[in-house]
Length: 316
Image 1 (spheres, rainbow, N blue to C red):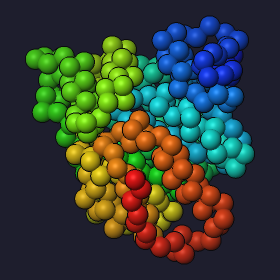
Image 2 (image 1 turned 90 degrees about the vertical axis):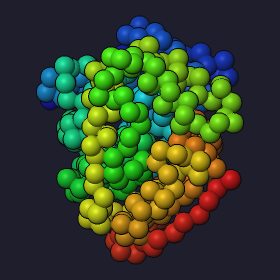
Image 3 (image 1 turned 180 degrees about the horizontal axis):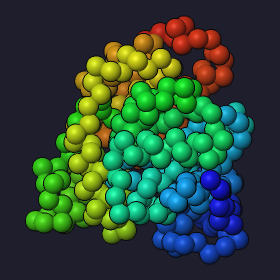
């Protein structure tokens, strides 16, 4: 395994979102969106990492213990820039484009929760990361539940955001994406319906603008895998500090589901936001605050997980 680093260092120079790079980006649209989402004055690196023949794109910033961010089925690592560097120097942020997504390689198959999980373990091996704090959003949370069950020794702590422990049925036409319904139409409906009806259009417009870059096979296989996912009743095997985040208005990964996940994991904490499914788009500041507080607890409490207690609260 070898690490191939694109000579691309993005430094946001001010509120204008201007970024510099030492090499032209492979995807100008992707890099422009990335630059626009970065907070001023933060330094980022985009790496291309070879996992024995599969190349994944990784966004990295900061120093300290690793925190690895995993996106959902209709997003990429571009939803994470403002969080990747937010917790340095205590934590080094790493956000990955899963196979088939963003700037990562798009092989013919393997777009399942199980394979995504295996890829993440291989990524950690390549980066020489023994244990990490893993943060997963929506499908990313499902992937990380699978990872935590299969490789508990690789998990320092777990953050599950807007996710479920059972099948997530997002659209009745999943098996036939491409015919009769185009995957772009399915994806648009899923995104819009994941926000509260009163959500301003500008909140989800950036997600809609990226739909044309997606691949129908990737979306179809990933959604099918999500519809077959079920680890309900198994999560009591997770014995690391865990934070569960849910939107009070989320009609997909509902508060009831989140409470069920919390109940299975000893000492898990639950935070409910006044948002829909995409809390990171609706309330990014509050999300960063809650995640930061959880990470601070990890630095203050090196004690065994048994010392953690269930806690639930709601943020406005």
